[in-house]
Image 1 (tube, rainbow, N blue to C red):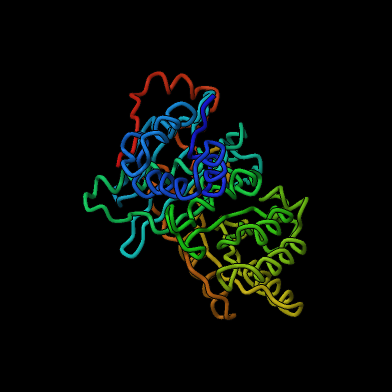
Image 2 (image 1 turned 90 degrees about the vertical axis):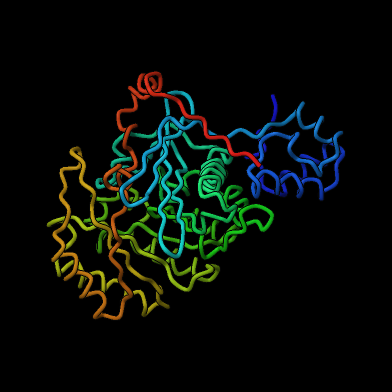
Length: 374
């Protein structure tokens, strides 16, 4: 069996090349061809010795994911549905803005956490993605979009691990993928511009802070344990007191001086003034223990039938945000993007929400293979 080089960060690729009798600088050249230039054909890699290229053809390959479909929103958001085999598919979303291009990447096929407001959680969990499957989403999106734009300039400036799945429950594949994103010979992304979102897997938050600290977003969604137990089942294992303590520890290593708390606004559930006041008290109470420097990102809920939940009215969201801001907490309201193609936050189940029929749909859909070239 040959090795997919998308599975390897630079250190692992150097070790792979060493086993072939090659020096590290050859691994660096190969890494650049793959990630900076999007090459998958070893014959394109003209500065590699012909002998190495022949070796690679016998033991390695560079293979991305097959795109089942691609949808472009009226606001320019692009959503891909990628086949990951076994009747499973994952979604990846590119969000263009004036000052950045953000790619939202999936880490699992499905999700085991089961948050009430997230359509992905309602489809169940199938498996973790490999490092190569995580990296391939960036590899393919960056080079396809770059080709379409035609100027050769970088398109993706920010990556958020906020797609399908709980990233910290796929830790062994996540960290090498992050290292590829951050490596100057790869995508050269700043640690401040790569964000891992978690529902609160406390032990893995501590490990990430030691192994590969990037920006951290925590899915909070409730100001007390009773409500959060209902909305985010993982809270029963890692309640708020433990979660906030882990956030404080993470800040010792984080590239940003704050944790982002994500808060999905649910009509009549967690959006009342008393909930905002309870959040303020929670943050301030913890501040007495050393503080959690944070900001809140209020997220409009994107309804789906199985949830039984409704989006908070705009007035309620504004009033909630104002209470937090008046208490000195930096608060933003996320602008919904791509909701006309089911690419908005919490909607990433889309075409794969009925997992038992994915294989049937894959057979019917026209398959588009996205294969970056140099």
